[in-house]
Image (cartoon, rainbow, N blue to C red; front, side, top):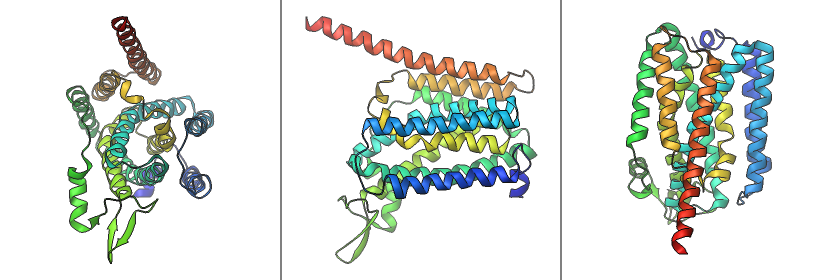
Length: 321
């Protein structure tokens, strides 16, 4: 069953094996070599690592498009951009989680590493299930489109709220099975206190990060199926985008909250993708048009936020004078 889903698409067995093998090697190298000891990730280091992951994705995209065709390359690029843009809101949630739990910057990478590792496994399962549904039941695409339209409406309606980790439902569920220590114990997820095994705030943060990613996956995974129904393109574009999420967090976590038009921009993006999915059988929108629309939405949201913040800053200076 799984083999028929995997190899029923554009990618042969060796590509799946090679892609997964390289991802595992990169994750092991990241954990054992580059971040073996806890340290605060500085902006310069984060920018370099982010550049590496983006360059890796671009290089793979060029090779993939050259090997399997222009259409496949464009589908990968569009799926990658969608996932990357939707991850910006996820980054802000991570920032709120770490702030609420008072997890020091030197230990945040460990939480993010295992959070991304779990996300890869979870998203892989969901993408394979989604690909199977789309292959056997074409009408599922209409349901995915409706989910995206609802998500777009929800993005506009929701307001940013502080995360109260102590009273979060996921933490309450965790607390029923094991006690939670209020103290940070280095990079440890578990600790023994007074003869009892307890979880540290780092594990609580990991649980919240995983829960938030599952919630965001409800938006991002249906969105990629609006671009392609090929399981390898859907999986690889999704995974390549979230692999660089850790480093990107340390680059933009502090100022992403200033992107006041981020949520409206993401709402428009989800609305466009959802509408595209619903009308695809009646009116086909070329992949290059979708790519240009997505780039235009992200550029407008970013530039509009920068301009609005600049105007507020100038007004503030004028009042002080």
